[in-house]
Image (cartoon, rainbow, N blue to C red; front, side, top):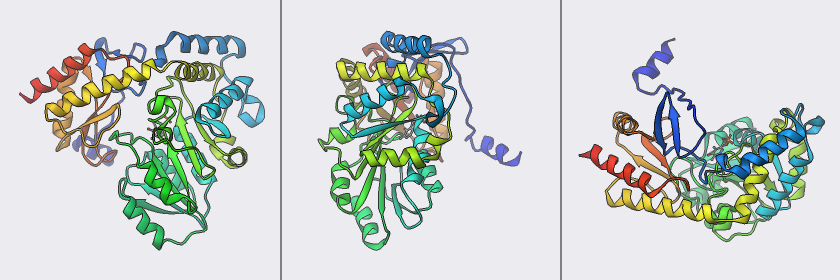
Length: 375
Ligand SMILES: *Cc1c(COP(=O)(O)O)cnc(C)c1O
């Protein structure tokens, strides 16, 4: 295949590297141990005893598969319990579960928009938002990253029945935070604001997310989604908003209607994960201590970490070869930190994610290795 050959030649081929250990601080790939700096399991909850116990209990009580979509017979009281935990945690009227963050965005975005509407999307939004917008019939406008003036300018020129602004809360490849205060000001009375908080959930504002970080109360024109697959240590996603929105989604979001419900064990793990986050924020505190330690060390050493403000810290490089070279060097040193290449990002980078599970030694060892590499 010619196209595949071109990918290889350009150094853009993606390959899977599965590990044979639990997801955690240390992972084993092909018999070799690595300190893992590429996990979104920010709090280490995927291996937390209470989360594992939650999954086990649900598995034993309700079995393995859920057998059908939610609207048929696939849902259990656990699904309902998790949704009410989430709506309470996020202080929204209602929450609805989807099978993943990806499936949520490609389901919800088309369901809340039609051909008379306009979607305004930050240029660095996650691919699932891009795909959701493509599946919708709305007109699409991409605004420059976090550029409120640009968005305002588009707002003035575009006529639409309904305007929807979509943004990541925390941007997944740069680790910077969306200017939600300004976005809210601009959208109030004029547009719906849709926030993808995949990396904000369980991380920002004691886990409650990016909107809460800005001290903004949920409102009827704000739609928030979050994932259970990252800081919550489980799998799946939720959308939160007013009651009518959720009822509308149950009736129209195709990825909700036409897909089998999440299995009970996954729901059991998510319930335990959310309960842990609600009860005790010490893991989140540790996450931020580690984050600040690593970010400060990287900046002091003169690495280009872009606009990072969160546990996602890219080391931005000039070209793909340098980024791949650094990842390969780190890999030799037993540090797992893969390269993110175009077209996923504009500038190639080694994307580091630091978690609550990392030790001071892990961070020092990473820094020493980085400095050695640079010579
Ligand atoms: C990871 C991610 C998703 C997709 O979530 P999954 O549960 O992994 O499908 C959606 N949006 C953003 C911003 C993400 O980082």
